[in-house]
Amino acid sequence: MEIPEGTTTTSTTTTPTAADDDKKYVYSVWASPPEDVAARLKKLMDGLRSEFGGPQFQPHVTVVGAISLTEQDALGKFNSACDGLQAYNATVDRVATGTFFYQCVYLLLHPTAEVVEASAHCTERFGYKNFTPYMPHVSLLYGDLTDDEKKKAQEKVSILDDSINDLSFPITRLALWKTDTQDLTLKSWEKIAECSLSPK
Image 1 (cartoon, rainbow, N blue to C red):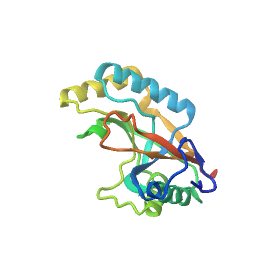
Image 2 (image 1 turned 45 degrees about the horizontal axis):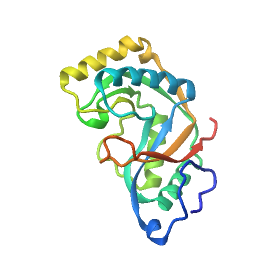
Image 3 (image 1 turned 60 degrees about the horizontal axis):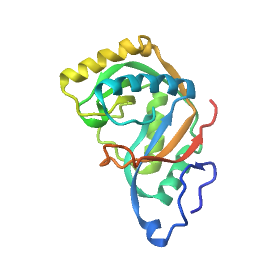
Image 4 (image 1 turned 180 degrees about the horizontal axis):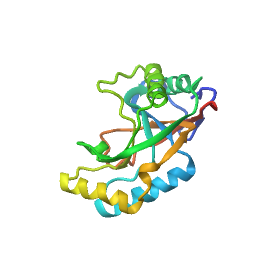
């Protein structure tokens, strides 16, 4: 399969058939934090998972939520989304908890103009419809916890990293991930392509 210019593939697939070309999968676009920030977040995530369980996943900010596409279409839209998008900064607001598996415990980010506009730029290229306002965040823990457990996990974040609320970092890379949301183990999730954003 031809990979759009400007992206790098990390998948090891065999030559696709016509049937494979038409098959749809669920994809998401993630903003990747720099390696030093990712290492800090992974340490925090590992600490939470050791106490509260849950699957392992890469630190990220979701830019485009789950959308069903063929791989060729997803790669084309991803390449279009990366084209002309500049690097931007993300800043943590606070540690928060949500009401479902994929938003259990997370770092809520400030919805600055550049953060919101980056998501709007990408969702438009993907034809993705947001039914709620974009809420930029970095998930720390996936799971179905009770309210008491979520509160304990939220408190644990401050114990594991007491200055996490002061975190600010640049977003210089986007990645296209295959993310079957029905797979709660996340073992089928894989990075398909990555691009570097234009310097500011």
